[in-house]
Length: 168
Image 1: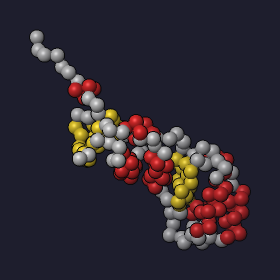
Image 2 (image 1 turned 90 degrees about the vertical axis):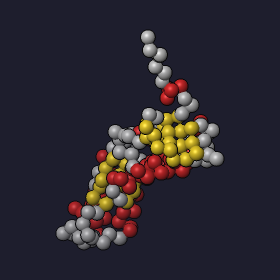
Image 3 (image 1 turned 180 degrees about the vertical axis):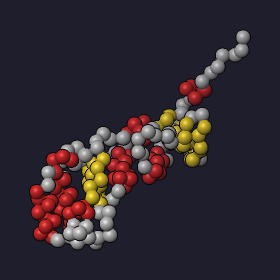
Image 4 (image 1 turned 60 degrees about the vertical axis):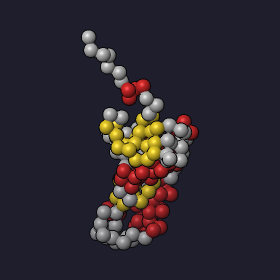
């Protein structure tokens, strides 16, 4: 009878970290203000303020919102600020940009608040595959956060990882 197969990965001290596990719940919304502009290009202050005041912002309860304008209009900074102040009671987070920038900002908060003491002195592997939209910047932020406490950092899966850092 052949030797018993031993799962060395399961028996190792290697700790896998999956950023997908830290994915915050909440709808992601791209809010485009182009429809509130005259002919899609001109922001008329009085009309814009009326649109903002009359809009039902409660529909964004517990959502993450990225504010954008998909036309080539020049939007004054106060316009996005005005919208964000109306969203503040409802949305979990508001940024100017696209959905990837929104996810990066969300993960920046998550990683900044991550307690890494449990990873101190351990070899770590940051899992690379995700079914959720984890932005590439999140992997960089996590690696930098873990570097001071880890003995080593790898990327990928335990069976086929890429070494990134080893404490000397």
